[in-house]
Amino acid sequence: QSNSLTLGYMDGDRIVALSMGHVKHWYTGTEYCIDELCVDRRMQARGIGSAFLGAIEAYLAEKKISQIFLQTDRNVPAYAFYAHRGFIELPDHVSFARQVNG
View 1 (cartoon, one colour):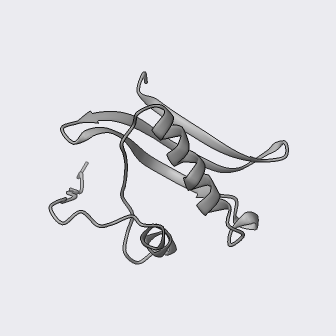
View 2 (cartoon, helix red, strand yellow):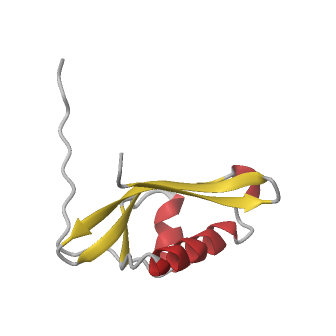
């Protein structure tokens, strides 16, 4: 897809974190919508996730992308990770889902 954006974080010659998403032009500005962000389980709790987010933000600022959008569940460790790093819940955002019967 032409608007896809995948970024990796290296430790030497090995990728230890990955962000996959897309760039979206929205009424509030251009945003990076993260579909998946992961850190190698063996490398977690070492500050790599925070450093990676910092690197992502620096890259986005260079590209004039003004915000990051992502979704997660409240009952998973990622929720506290993002909240601790300044991400906020959007009060007017609603996510919908529907089961497909087939």
